[in-house]
Length: 594
Picture 1 (cartoon, rainbow, N blue to C red):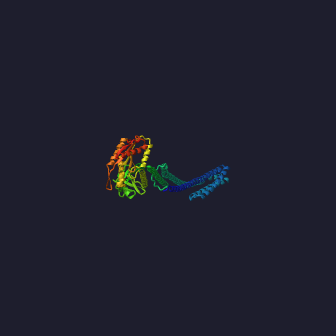
Picture 2: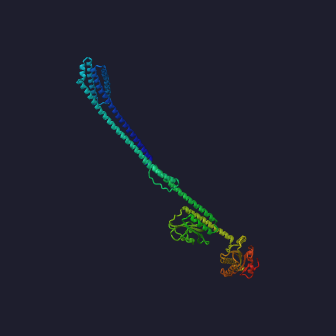
Picture 3: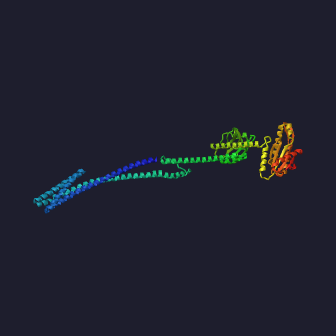
């Protein structure tokens, strides 16, 4: 029941009880008034009877004194008493008209008769005394008749008094009983009103309002401080406090929801910031290794519960090789063919694992984790794969996370495509299309860079020429000549490994730059190149091409001379080697050029 309803009921009952209490007090007051009237009536009747009794005795005494002494003052006193008796008789008559019962009325009439008889006897005695019959008058007043009448009068007075006392006493007792009863009823109702008031104070103000409000004050204070972890007890009362409790519950739930949304927003913003940082760094990468390192660095920050790896498609488009990983992925091979992944087959993200109902990818092993493969594409071409796996008992990535994953995949794919395109353009600008070696323009750049550097380290230059190259073009065609050039270029690369850099100088001539090595080491390397080239037996279209030999000129800077003339000195040594019969290595120092 609502507090307002209880309060209204309590107010109505209190008003009713107050009215009843007031009525009881009024009735008690009326009974008390009846009690007072009964007492007043009794006193008035007692006073009247007493006046009659005393008046009769006084008049009898004055009459006797008068006939004994003959003094006029006693006669006057007797006559004055007679007037008083008349007034008393008149008062008695008025009393008889106001509430005397029949018995009292008869007693009062008899009292009047006895008083009149006694008065008549006394008057006759005074009259006799006035006529000179003193003895007769005295005998009359002191005789037995007078005594009898006076005794009858006094007896009748006592009878009337007893009757009046009995009636007024009964009325007094009845009025007192009623007054006591109404007073008790008024006090009881007043006590009930007080008890109701106290009950309202205790059960409504204290238990239903004060105590819940005191409990809610602490809760509201903590909620005001955004401490939404506070527990709000369930209060199923259907009153204002219950509604307030429900409002506080709703406020707490809204606060928790707002806090959750704020946490999600902050996490989302943090994810966006990390994504933006990663994208900026991806665009600045110069190699695929750098790009893989960036992805492996940022992916676990964005998705801390998901291990994974970055796979890049090989040049021949047949294999995927893992170039970077994070959080130690366990369920995917480090390298696999393109047809082993359903994501690459379908060109869209593919989920495999325990919770998935689709077919698993062939490059996965074990079923302890849920995996996600997202293909990396750029301009419609497949470039690689972004692989993630969710360990057991970890939450699955939600729709927002999947969107971020696809966004990462899109940007990583574009970054890889940009790198590959840049490498392709760089190769086109710096490499010779036929041999795959660096071209002459890049050679000039490297030499210019060496000339501008302040390094005192040595730099050796090998100028290499294929002996009798024109013979291959003339006898077997230009395709055979191209094959010879490619073969010699590959021999140079295989022999050099990481000891130097090879360039195609032009036609059948090649250049090799070897840093930080002495002349003897460089000469030994040149001889190794010459010997490796001479071991090859080539054929073209089923026709043997014969042996290949090369001539080499060697120059070193700064030992032999300045860097500006390094290539020309090596070329001069090459010309001397060709002049001396080819298939040999000649040092620049042997030419006498500095």
